[in-house]
Length: 120
Image 1 (cartoon, helix red, strand yellow):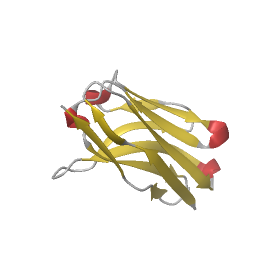
Image 2 (tube, rainbow, N blue to C red):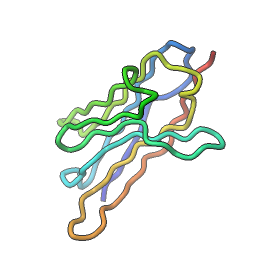
Image 3 (cartoon, helix red, strand yellow):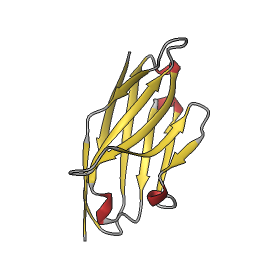
Image 4 (cartoon, rainbow, N blue to C red):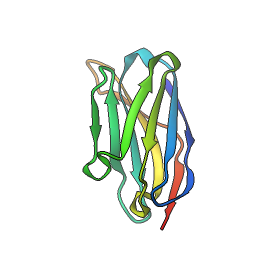
């Protein structure tokens, strides 16, 4: 079992910055990937950024160069630094973790949603 506690978010003007944090606890040794997803009203949830246990990062095209995902291994925490925010970044952001369960399907865990609102 893995527990995810997300923090951060809030209201910011366009061009501003926010930082989201996701603290993992429980069976964290078997986590393969931690990621941030977001869901805007009326839209599907989409993958924003991910970081693997090996440190490989991935970003959706619209946030490349503006968002940075990183991890603090000692604290079992993943951060999402969001700079130069745009109104279209407004959404509820969710922390996600995939836990290895080989040879079966992996387990998926979600943290609570964080509202990020960017005003123009």
